[in-house]
Image (cartoon, rainbow, N blue to C red; front, side, top):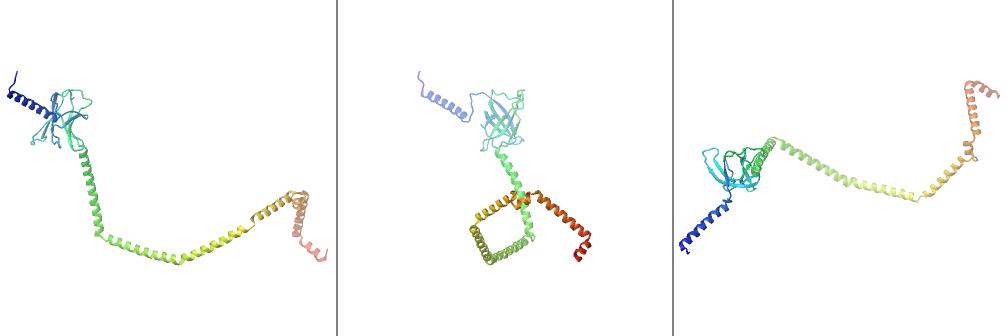
Length: 291
């Protein structure tokens, strides 16, 4: 069976149109062979959200933004329709959250599912909220920090202006000039002291060092070893004289009779002195008449 050229051209056109249709949806990230379920959310602002933006559940891509409609006469001007896998059942309490997608400022939809929810969602309209991303948080932090810095700069400028309006700067400069002049005088005094007194001190130190060297030389020349040896010999002789019973020192230290005799002599002398003090005339009379 032969087909005419017109039929072949028509079939080729139909195939091209089908490929173009499926290719466009494929490039948009839409899987037309996968059944989906649509949910709707209302937003006051979108912050750059576009169609075909991804839809996540706990970071997993489950669909995409299908359409975005707007009506600026309403407070919630934007109506966002998302399509997610039909096999995913959303429980009651689920919400659509507008979140940042990456560091380049892209936006995506995060479907937040409560963990303790058991009832199935009865409506296709989900509550919505907007969550600031990293860039927005940094911008807010930087703006707050900038406001604080600006306030501190204003306070500093006001303080500087108050100082400039008074005579604090002039008095400070006068004090600095006075201190500089005193430092100059001190430097001159130190210079004069260095040139006049320091050479004399150095000469005195040199003389003292020479005397110390002479004393050290005399000490080195002295016969210290011989002197120590003679002292040691003398100590040995003295120790022998003390311990020996034959020497005079030994007899004085070891003889009980000599000790007793000396003791009795001292006692007698003490008695004699006591009697002289008591009867001095007796001894004076004896001395005059020779008795």
